[in-house]
Image 1 (cartoon, rainbow, N blue to C red):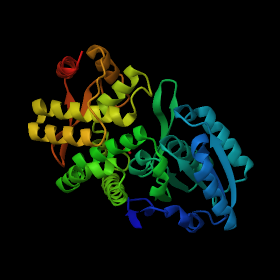
Image 2: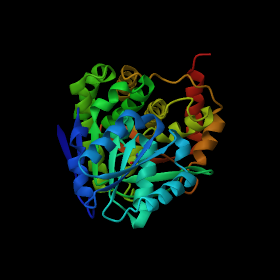
Image 3: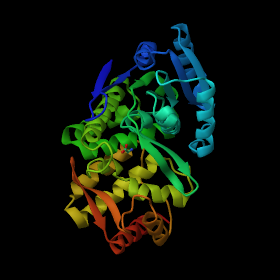
Length: 366
Ligand code: GLY
């Protein structure tokens, strides 16, 4: 069992538990968050059975009153309608400020439950039980919550740190291959941005991670969470120019996902392509070495994240990037890796981005 304490200035310190079987201690952890013993458990259709039901049963057997709210699985649930229905159900369940919300699911459930939990009665404790590799290493830690609007993803949200995070690695056993690779992309992103020790450890263990070897999975999840915790503790509201590093690979990734149609490529596959692209831009902007590009390409290949053969109009990709909510004053911003563990955020000229997009597109097989 690994316990990581997340210590963010101005916030209550909280614990992330990473272990095979971590869920067996959930009642004890929830007890500290819900003195009223009233729990509102949010999950989705896919995760409800068996994980969320097992959690609900365990909590009930320990004397908790548990209301289970299921939302349809998928991004559509991160909506104002769904949030409204959950707030209504929370009121009907007579939650009080000494109750807690438990989120059991992937990133959608975590973001949505975090959002309604952070706003109902001006904020209840939220326990995160991430059930995908991606949500374990990224969204369950760090306190970003969100819902989508018609105009774009994650446009409404809060920063609300969870009270406790329980990452039970057993739940990953049934994760589909595409979802696994998706989590691996965020692990690779963290390793490249963090340090030589994380990156080269991952290079050495990438095959084992792709094969889901237990010890390596535990170590990779732990290292990623420790990295994220250190970033968030320095810049919890993304105002200091540090948390932005977590967007490595994401500028192009968002454009790929949108241009291809959401769901065509997984978020992770798009992020991996975005990392390849940002590193190549780095050659022009930050003296990024060809060795780094090669090492990162090989790592992503080993993790089941091959270069995407996605044909698109470079001008369209550029326009999508220019309309992204993270664009400031019309300037495109990329997290550029100078080397392993060294990065900077660059405002990049649209003409240069277009040139590199054209080069990428020319390099694709016909
Ligand atoms: N997923 C990026 C962040 O938490 O800032």
